[in-house]
Image (cartoon, rainbow, N blue to C red; front, side, top):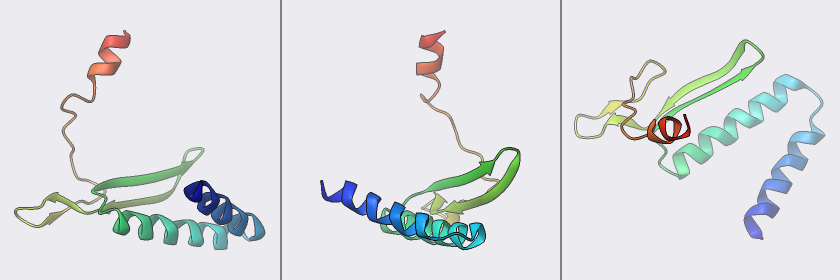
Length: 88
C-alpha cells in the first residue's frame, strides 16, 4: 500500500547514504517529524550495543500543567505489565 511505499522510499534514501553520521542525522530528523505529526507523547531511545545514540522526550507528561516529557520523565505502567504477568 501507500504507507509501505513511503517506508520503502525512506529506506532507499537511508541506504544511499554511506556516512553513518549523515544517516543518523536523517533518522533523527524523521523521528522528530513523525513524533510531531502524530502528536506523540513519550520518550524514544535508540541504542547500538551498549551505546546510547539517541534519547529524546516528546509531547507532554502533563498536558494540563504543560509539563513536557523529558528523558527522565517517570511513566506509570498501569496495565502495561498484565500481559507479562499473564505470560508467566
